[in-house]
Image (tube, rainbow, N blue to C red; front, side, top):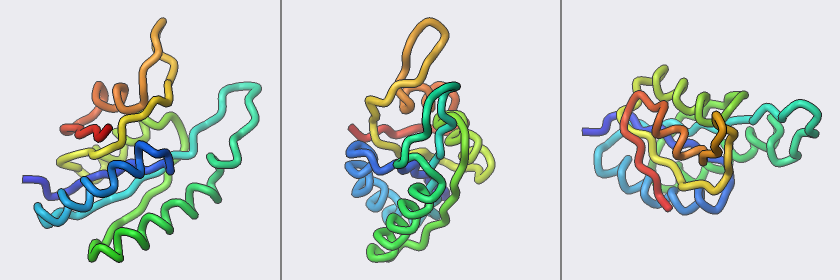
Length: 134
């Protein structure tokens, strides 16, 4: 059913909580697994966060790749820059993902007069089903 799973990872507790579910789903469906992490472009006048640098994201992806390898899963990794929900959906479209699995996040992104979580915005933009793990 799910041949290609995309897992956005950012080092948050919500993202870490979703790892077990991603591992189980990938094994159950013998699916290929792609990890994506996004270096978020800071708002004008904002200093970039040290946890949101290209170097920090590369280190996170390497650590995650090792973790999944210990579980017998060979994963692909990709790093993007931009707004997380848009970048996640772009990668899902590019790899023709069948499913996005992500941790529920309290991180908010600006909307048109409202504020939404990255997970909520991803659900609205995604080219495939999204499973959000709280």
